[in-house]
Length: 162
Image 1: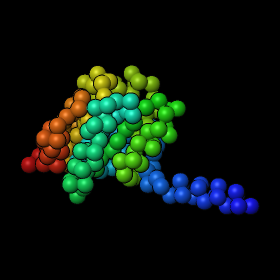
Image 2: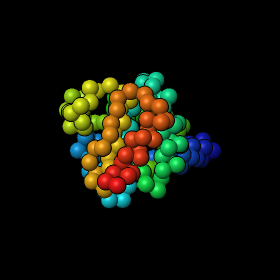
Image 3: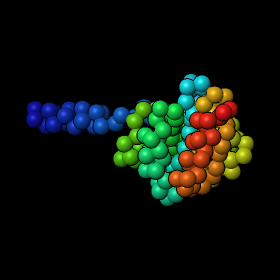
């Protein structure tokens, strides 16, 4: 009986740990979520993977910026890990204190890349900023970027049309 109580306790604790809604999605699913913020917030989408060192390096900085600009910016993280690495990606997101909706790519690479942004080579990390007013892409870049680069992109999105 003690073993059952212990196991149930572990299950309950592990369920409470994650504050992430980690959805398997295709590129169109992500666009639908982005569109929900049109007219309210700029949206920054960061495409990353657990096996991508530059992705992991810039992650804490993106988290800091998401808090700094939370009134005007929504940040989504899209894991490009393989589906069999879903637990690994979720564990990493939890370690970074990510909350809310995050995504795991569930689409063939070429289709996902082409439907996400025709100028994306597929290199990670990849970041796209959508304008607050239009909901359209206003900035994007491949590779690890500086805080200054992120702030510039965020400001373009937030101040779009001004």
